[in-house]
Length: 429
Ligand code: URA
Image (tube, rainbow, N blue to C red; front, side, top):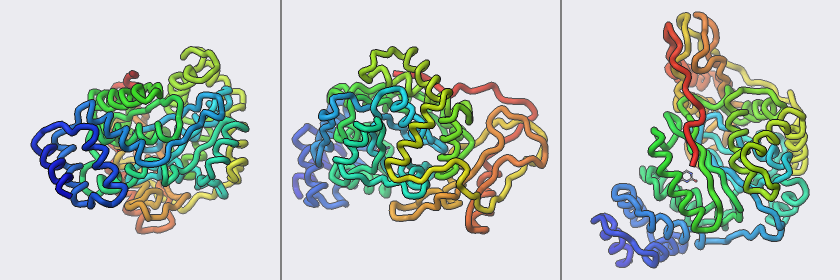
């Protein structure tokens, strides 16, 4: 298409693309009129030249209009959602979704699958036997009305442009553009009918943004789109130097989420969940401010209501959840080579180890092993004695256990003195 050629050249030379050009491009990607080599070239020009605020917003709007948009207005209640920009060991949705319902609000989410070193919520949920993530829209709505919580797979008809563009970006080195990331995240939120969104934007080794300033810029763009589309969006910036919690891998993470839902579990997971509840619940129709929202969420974790809502949610979506039901696979332990304090647990390396063990995908068509993963016995700041286990990797395959074990060995750094404690919550917007 000559038109696309001109659009590519314009962006390559640093020009701005107007709304009609972006709309025609997006529509052409979905219809097949724009071949993948031209789409890839334009994506690369966008990565190298950047997108203006207007271009980002127009792109998001064109993506929203590329497919079906859901109207959840029949519920007559705000439907809340959160999005995390991809972390290692991030099981927050598994806790936050039933917690929001236990607090009296409605949490509805359309989620994607994990790719690369970060796990996806759907894979975690599907590690519970029988859990159905594909629900017809009517069932999704009825479930939200009945129990206040539903998490389902993204319908193929919602934002089809993102599915096509993301697949290209993934293999052409064009994921890393702030405008493309913001448009991709927010188009899906807006099109799936969400009333208000809390974003958890990760900063650090295991994340898109290596520093806070970069995460703030992605957050600013997401808020710009959210506000323009009438979906109030707040951002929390959280550290992702080390994995969140101690479990990485689908079933292991469900077990850890259950601990947090039961008022126990790792303090960092609980803290992040509570902070996100404090961001999100004020957008519900409950008249709560952030402080009251946090207090209500704390109470629901501690008095068993959040755990009860998790059980109800699993039951209604077909999942057979019984605490303690899972058997562990054979494990390989990585031991501390010396006495000392843990000064680094590289989130990216732990994520890769879990992926090698079978918990993650290399390509979208790969199958994940629900039982594979990594348990961390020590995290930043903790003392360890020579020979004690630092981490255990679980896999069905002895060769994979060895390979993942080598990655885990390199993921840890020990020193004679502890490093200063690093905060988990780095900021909000
Ligand atoms: N998550 C998304 O949904 N899209 C991106 O582009 C990056 C992260």
